[in-house]
Length: 430
Image 1: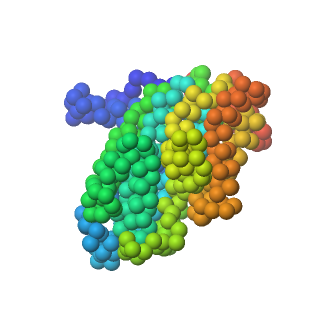
Image 2: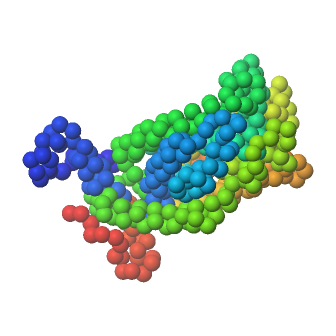
Image 3: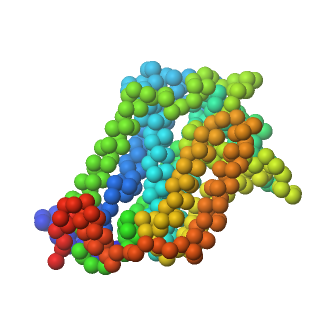
């Protein structure tokens, strides 16, 4: 379902002159006003708009913060403190940016969960999904480099530990680490590299997001039933129906975001990062930011050698493999039914997967020893089994529920079940 020919007609002479030379208003009108969207979209679909708002917020606050930040190991920590204490509204900019990273990841993880649940990765939306996974990868790289910039204890030691894992890669590992560090240890060249890349990558992310939105408008929006649009009765105009729902979802999300910014600005950070880095004093437990903890748990879960692959290299492969799995999901799921709403067994395995991902996050915050190590290995096993075993096999053996004949039928059935006499949403188009 893609947008048809725009019906936009300029009403003024200047508008007609501008439209004939650069039809930007026509593009906006066709893409965000009369663009047809499925009439049964729920609030899980508002997180695409929320992510766009968060990206813009991160870029704007980041550009202003960069004007005051000093990427020097002797001055970086104090420059951040000066931003908070002496720069006009600096405390607000820092809180918006640091907490914005956390809420950016909250939104993207919910967005991914929705895509996996409703089968938004299935044909013809494979490239749309791959672009989304590319956005996740760019976000993770940007966030990791940004975490190093305050140059606190956890920033320094987090950079030391993570960059050290690249040495496990045969032949080129040492070269990759030295390229990242700009030398043989985390020092001033490292900070300068990370600052430059942290400033650059968000603009690359914005470019891929633009491609992601473009691909979405070409193939059309998926919906909770997983059924393609069959008639004009199945869709409504993006404005006002979807925009009002998106606006309400954004307001609720931003309310929670504002609560953390104004009342708990440091709650999602690590206390050790409030002290300046000390290369001679190692923290008791080196952990990344909370949004990396599931992948950190997977990295530490490999404590054994497998043939020529030692535990260190195995952990690195497992960590990157856990992200790579998302890229190939469209080709792993063999079911002909998109939405988990009509797949009873997949729904069970999916929610266990979600709980398992949260469990991995908790395990990543603990020590890599004793029961934590064993539970991390079991949770990692299920993580990969969900993609490699559950998705391919379940699609072949599962008996799905009966699918509605159309989106409109699904809406009316749900409306009747709710007891409102079959009245649902706006009037259908003729």
